[in-house]
Image (cartoon, rainbow, N blue to C red; front, top):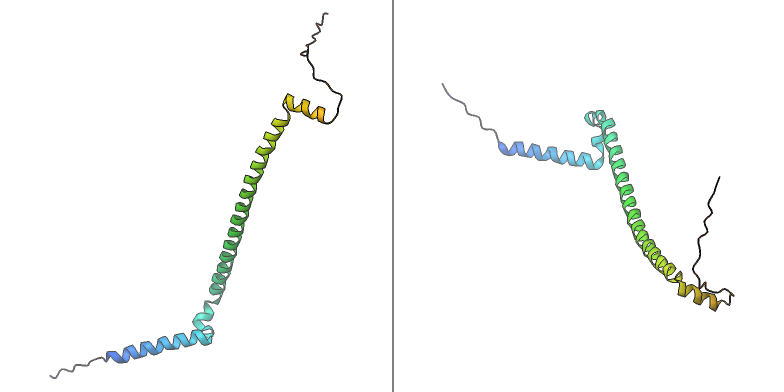
Length: 127
């Protein structure tokens, strides 16, 4: 009994694998891979994935736009708050009695300061 030993040539398999990879890459670049039956069967799924990718990109741009608007509005809020505080301080300064009397004199009005405090008038209702 004679034993036969066959050796599988490893370099041939790797050559076939490289050739298959080159064929796949060539098919991707020249577009012929899209005409294969396996890919054509998956076309609705690929279109769905492309649609989701477009929605995802659009959502990201929309979110970035909202963040930019929010930061602009926060800057505007800070500016308006500072303006409000300065306006309130100016109003408080103008409404002091001494400031009011000075402004009346500057404008030439014939108003005079009350020297006597006001009196409260109360009426008793008797039935």
